[in-house]
Every structure is written in C-alpha cells, then in structure tokens.
Image (cartoon, rainbow, N blue to C red; front, side, top):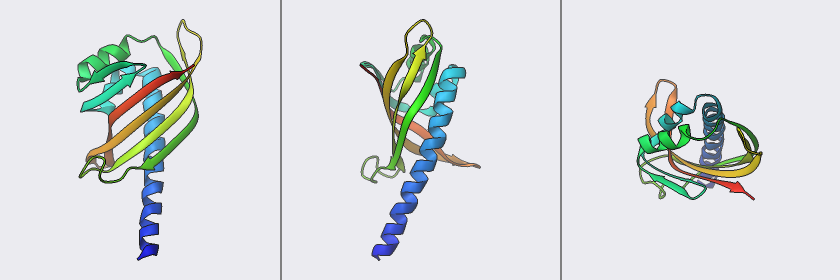
Amino acid sequence: MAVRNQQELRNSIDSAAQAGEQFSQLYYEMFDKRRHKVPKLYSASSTVVWNGNVINGDLEKLMDFYTNLPSSEHTLYSLDCQPVTENAIPGRNTILIVVEGCVKFEGHKSENFSQNFLLTVEGSSEGGQVWRVASDCFRFIE
C-alpha cells in the first residue's frame, strides 16, 4: 500500500509541476503581450492581492486594474509548483505555484517580485483540465 501511495504522490507532484509550468508560461506571456485576456485565467470568485491592492470576486475590476498598469516584461528566476491537499478547496484539484522574478514596467525601473497562485480545476476541455486562479498574491521585493 505504501508503494502505491508513494507512486500516487509522485504522479500528483509531477502533474502539478507540469500544469504549473504551463500556466506560468501562459500567464506571463499574456500579461506582457495580451493583458486584456489575463482575467480569463481567473475564476469569478478569485481573490487578488497586488502590492496591497485587493480585488475580490470582480473580474471587471481586475481587468480595469491590470489594463491600467504600464506595459511590462517579466523574467522568471524560480518557479515551484506543488499539489495542495484535498482539504484546501473540497472537491477540486488544487495546486500552489510560487514564482520569483524581475519585472520591468514601462517608465519604471526593474523590480524583483514574488507571486503566489492557488489554482483549481474548473471543468475540462478536450485538451485536459482547465485551471483557474482562485488566489493570486503579487508583491515587489524591496
């Protein structure tokens, strides 16, 4: 039984890493080049904390907030993904993504940042599971 549980855990970790890497690549490419589409990655009940600015469950406010930021270019230094226990969001597969990197907003100096995402599965498509952001916390590192 322990071997099966270990194998299930390994598969869960590998799956979370793959989904987290794919999501992060898509997220930062969209944020830098097609920002108006970024809110499509969030669920209707998402909570976003961006350097102390809180947006809770309002995709229209989130779109307004993100589209009013200057254009950007992100460089990722580290990315860690892991599955979260079933107790976090009952009945849904959930993963935690922790990112550190550097972002350059137009007209501003480059800044290091840390960003944490909690993703949950919302349905599926022909290509597999559809992950949506349940929680997003972005902070400049000073």
